[in-house]
Length: 53
Ligand SMILES: [Zn+2]
Image (cartoon, rainbow, N blue to C red; front, side, top):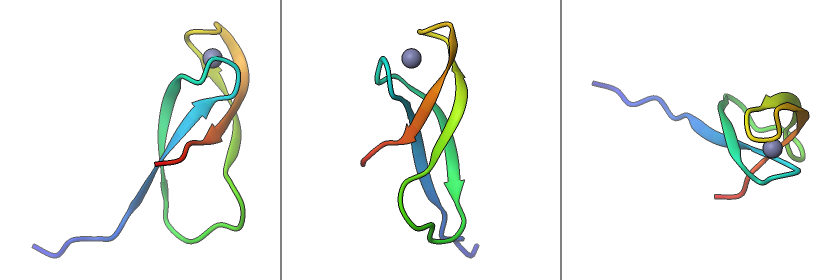
C-alpha cells in the first residue's frame, strides 16, 4: 500500500487556543493558513489559525 504524503494541520482558535479543526495541506502554502470558523468553546465565529506542531 502506497502512502500518500499528507500534511495535516491543526486549526486553532485565536481567542481560546482550542484546536477545533483539522485540514490537509496538499501543497505548500506561503505563510500560515487562516480561516473564520465556528468555535464551540467561544460559541461564535472566530479566526482560526494554523497551529504549530
Ligand atoms: Zn475559541
